[in-house]
Image 1 (tube, rainbow, N blue to C red):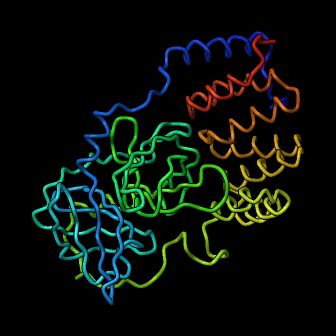
Image 2 (image 1 turned 60 degrees about the vertical axis):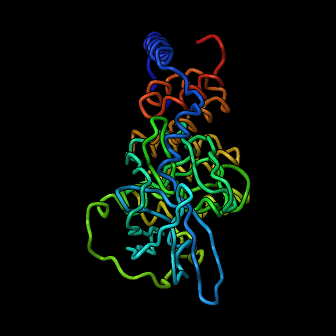
Image 3 (image 1 turned 90 degrees about the horizontal axis):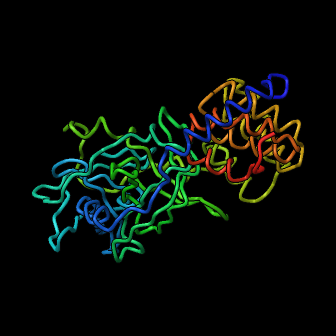
Length: 347
């Protein structure tokens, strides 16, 4: 950003404006007990019976009257499915399956659970608070409060990455925003340290809710979810996340370079080029890549945030401050994080 840096006076004005606007935005607060109770009315336990009488338990989220969304990997081997809510067990008479996206919609007559309010995952911001709700270990219904740590575009919508932890028994449960609107369905966790919990966006199934076609009797399903394929067939964000979790920075840089060469318009590829370069302490290369990412997508919050961090690492505090107004427009929570890291007194 140095080549386009503003004057000291304009940087100071922008900095003061950002601080004033940020001060007017309330910080995220922990959801209260009443919210958990309200959300719990839309979460059900899914009980699966497989060939040979084997038994499996997962979670489902009610999205309309007598309609329950769950993860297809929960029901994949089912010969019978029951939904348990309020001490009453109801059979699922049919399901609509999208195995590739790992989403199954169950038809459960006479289910009395309340449908969740369906929100929009594409309105989420990095750093925004979310609640994950499912049957931990297949036992008790447990909430996990966390933040959005990544938004990865796949098939026209954003897979949500968060640090709101959940176990396999919670697969099919709901991820809710701070208002209590359903924004995603809990799917899987990647191995490695850090926030590696992922959920499918509601946009992938919202068109199904009011439709009655494409349902089939409950039976075992074929195919594999997008996240369970061979490494070469995984979405690029998963391949990049794996290399990040393993701290393989040189390999990540090579992968991001290949990604960028195949899709020069990808802000994600440019972001990962910058991230790998920053981990290799190549500040100039990282800054150039992050600037390219935000030129391609001015709302790429993580790219703005990492750009600010890299400016700080390079001793360019004034340029880091110039990032704040842009970052504030993309993610208020990340703007708070960057401001916290800045020197106390502007230049």
